[in-house]
Length: 335
Image (cartoon, rainbow, N blue to C red; front, top):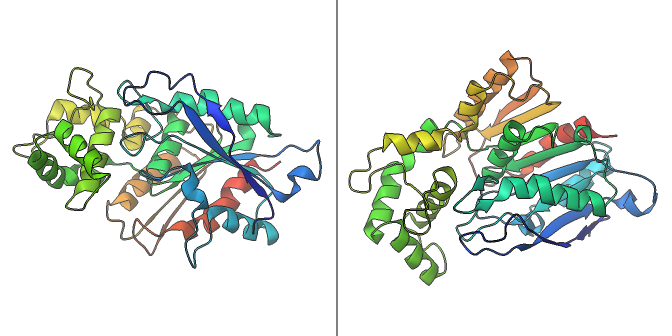
């Protein structure tokens, strides 16, 4: 049992109206209120936004798994130990028909970065007693959620001051490009992206045989390289389906979304951050520890406060790492 409580108010989004996949515009916002929220009606609290991984919705943070506490149970253990301050934790619903939005704006999927910053944040801060200043806001996530947190730091630095990335997508040349071969085979066998998604939805989800990697590739194609002239779901693949070889012009569009590419292109990236937390397992299947190393090196060389760690593990079953990041993230934004 939590000592705090979780609420699920519904936000009617104008930003998401008319999105091409036909995804809902009425979205839950998961809000965790700490135990002391009701005790002092005038007190305000720092805010931590949690971004879920690809194919994991906002309510994934509440999922019960035997022997594994939820992030909110972990937070309350840390709170009881005096390791974290009381804070409001928020998880937005940024799911799409294709399994995720990467928390970016795309003509083919919807303006999810604007949705998070321009709708979810004001909605929460008008409804709950937050410390409504950048200095008291953090954003963090795992995998695609970590990518989303890094991109918010790069694209919308006015919104948050502290960023956490648990094995967030970056260094696309080493983390995404090796997947071209398997994705080309799976999507090619289906007859192309439009035929693959038709079969995928008829089956009700992935059935193995590379389906998960293929739908994620199609989802990210619609986000990183939207092409409204292409068949639905309107994304340009970065490789040729017949050969598996890169299509360099399209691949460059994908690379332009890589946090590492953007850091290299902007010498002011994260200059005003209070803290950037980066970690990844030393055996991450996508090589995301290699990208985290490079991001950390770039930012540390510029004087950004970075905590970078590698731990024994892979890309999955890493929820225990919140025990490490939450005290750092919340400590940096606490009142």
